[in-house]
Length: 410
Length: 150
Image (cartoon, rainbow over all chains, first blue to last red; front, top):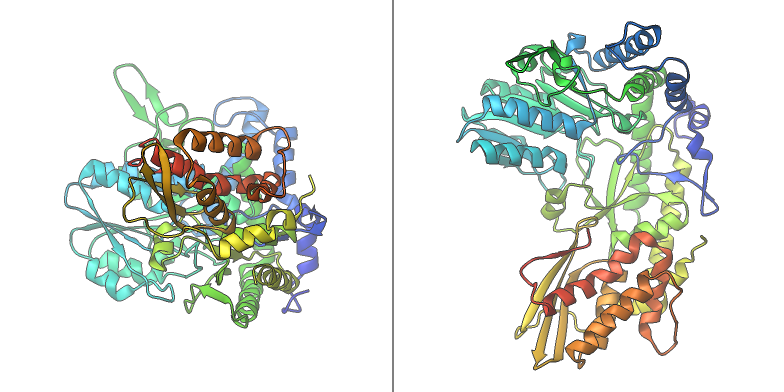
């Protein structure tokens, strides 16, 4: 079923129950992985098993079930640590998702480190979740936001970035992979140049972690965030990685239970990392099942996943490029398996509805990245984003669907 | 619910979307309003010219899908020449037919009947209603605050 003969695609597809569902009488062709990925049985079962056999609140009870749940949750933290190659498990903060992770850093780190005239560098490629939190803290502190432009291919312009950097730069917050275009940002270079100016760096890894192995120590990145649901894990759970020294120097983000050391009405002292940033009862089953998702990916291996997805992207790009009325948006040299495009004279919304009728799920709209759309003077695009279970046959189904749209609107 | 694509994209809808009526800017508009659909990034600007309490002209400038452009195009044809009261009545009737619980009356001589296929596509209803809400905002003097589908 794939261009890569050794990739166990049939077994992998069998791991995802939803892929055998029918949509409007047609097999589901799920090409909206950039929005959220489907879940393997291992993850679904792990959630059930948690609630059925080892559930209680964590870090509280002296009783057996509480200890079981705590152990499972902390084992997942170590899995996330290993996944990102963080130096210490204390550097892994569980959050609701990348959005909460970025808000945490913008608010907590921002309040402690930003003052009027300081500069925050973002890029045109950012998802709204890596724009709005910085605008909010900039408004509160008087810091100024600078934006790195992209070229017509959707490439992050390192030269322009270098011009924006100065001793006033305090934070560089950019995406690792563009959700709208698939562009892989040269983050190693971005970080090196930021460090030379003494700026901190946050990377939004949402679209990167499902496709690319990430090593936060090799990158020397200060903060890295990702969402579990894009990594074949549950929704409502994500990870913020932060360097220990930075996290320790930051004030808490939210107050509540779990994050305290001792509370009196006169003064409260806060818990150690990571609990200082984990106020309230966490998404216990979600955390545990996120660990299972990581195990699942490691079981297939990132080299195999990357090769398979690269084959799909190359094949889909060739097929769509050959269609006269299709314009591909985002043609960077290095891309993750995301293909944004438009059919001339047909609005993406109409394309989405017609493809849906063939059971093909794609994202249509601005992808929460309106500055990218503005850069190309578009309201929206159609986005096919591929995952580890997609096939060339599904690309063919997309191509057939596009032809149907063209016939209808001819 | 089974849905039929050809009910949604009827020829009359495709025709309006290809060659919309009254598209463009109305230089001597007496009222205007902006409508946004934050879900898809679509935008529409509606211009109205009033002659007393009668709508003498309507234009729209849209970046939208076939459904929203066709809806806007049909709307301009229906409302030009109507009094404000008649326009209000047309809004109400359109809204009820599109979003009400009861199946709408369909008539061959009524172009808007073609839009009723949208009822089977809940995610697209806002595409059809946005132009109307925007024009209503222009008439009600709410032109400074953009209308949003959310």
